[in-house]
Image 1 (cartoon, rainbow, N blue to C red):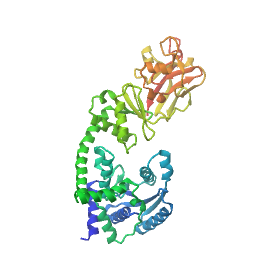
Image 2: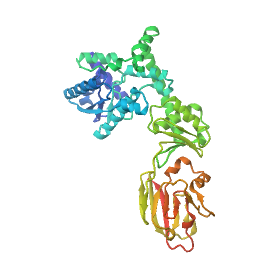
Image 3: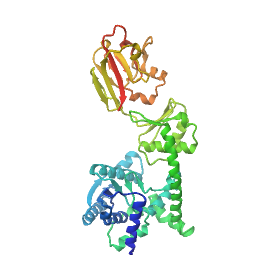
Image 4: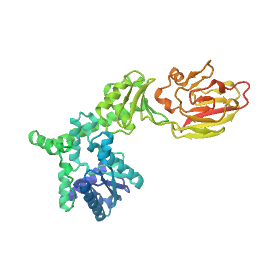
Length: 462
């Protein structure tokens, strides 16, 4: 069997062992024109009939090397035609985005590359996104994470699969890929930035690893992969345990905030707290979690109520009323005019508001214990009714109490969490507050013996 046939067999084995591809999948290949992606596309094209897959390839111009990118794009287009693969071309201005986000070029390029590939997959109905990471990339990533002080997750390195991202070359070495390209006389483009020593990963590949192999053991790469595989097996257990605990203390809100119950949290060991925070950040769509940020959130979980910290990716973490909230601030409840009867859907937060005329048979039916239902006297409404967010400094008279009070102070007294106030719809008429939805009605619209039209108000999540 030729070396290239063995390599094809190894890739087919990796696909099966790591459950990367299902028969009939439509697969988008991240295609730079470099040796790894050329080998990947060629191997998948050779496996196309066996796996009953269809293929597309996407070249992404990061606007880092204008002249080289133009040549690469033409090369990738031509090679896709040769392989009978659909070609996509995308562009993203990484230098501008990196400056805006105050992030590194490598980090920004990677972030937006995956965003573009995932968008293309959604729009063009691809089931999986295949990228060209191989065994040597895994070794370099593990060392990179180790030098950055990563935890156990970092020492697992690159997974064979995460979501729809798959890595069919996962168990191949760089040497095997070079052998495959040579046997098939496959052309490829070389990105000179991959040799630049200003990038940490390049220094690990060209200087650190050769030194370790020469001075410590020639089997360093194999030993590092073995370590990663041992940790990965252990991580499977720890992840399962973390998910079990996470499910007990996690909730989300109609407005998209993520919440942890700090009552239980405080009894957990520090290792579990860190893992819960990582899981929480993943839930918020943040995968490149930094140790410093994880520790800040862990410390916040033990801080007094009202403590807050700003995180990357536009996130804020805050404690209130025995809970930790993670959210992106800025969303507001848009004003909507209301009619009785009527049903209204609020895009933020995800709530449905229903107003109906009813005839309650007893005073006990006028208030629901969970606050999601309230009853008011429709004859006491003044002018048009509308829903909006809580206005700063607005006053109202809570049901059954003498005198008015600032709504914010009333919510504080009721221990209503401050981070949730922007998610609380408020019904107003021309005289002011009618209902702090889910909390309290204004006393002036209460139902009484003289009520002729009782209006039932309901707020429900959808």
